[in-house]
Image (tube, rainbow, N blue to C red):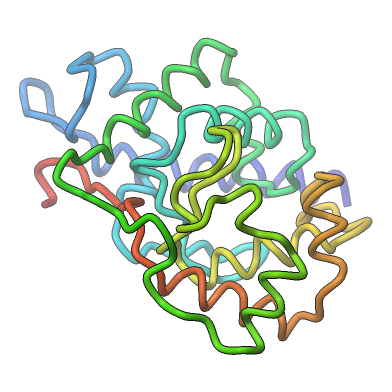
Length: 230
């Protein structure tokens, strides 16, 4: 099994890197909207753009789902997530292969890049969720106490180390929530005692209902393609 996973890591990196290179600008060509305007940071985020810079792009392993929108996400959360992939606290073969070679400085720069990439002063989100949940979902939200961390509109967490989740892809949110329930799976799962305790209270169907509701809310997360592909 270890040999199989090692082989998969190598193939995943080769595949994702190839896609990123195919999307990367030729010399002298303007690249993706780069908040820093730095060729150095653009090189660091190239592999990220290969998936997270394509609208509707789907991961195919360990489950099929749209990769999350990360432009506009909190830098502190992105950095924490990359660090968890690097340590193996988040078990995702492709993401771990991407995160492992990154230094702390790389992680900080990449996280800051994507936070700035999605900022739009014109966006004025409502103070509370813009849609009323069904009675079933309202009960689930109350049981999970989601707003106590993710904020009353699910787009302004009480701490930037927690993710914005309003408007995020429903299938991604569902897989992420299921990951907190997973144990002893080498390719899927997330080690977080707080989220683990919360997610394990719910059935798979209930997690799917929560994900669908949160995804339907107005948020400021987005997918920003490389400039020349917009």
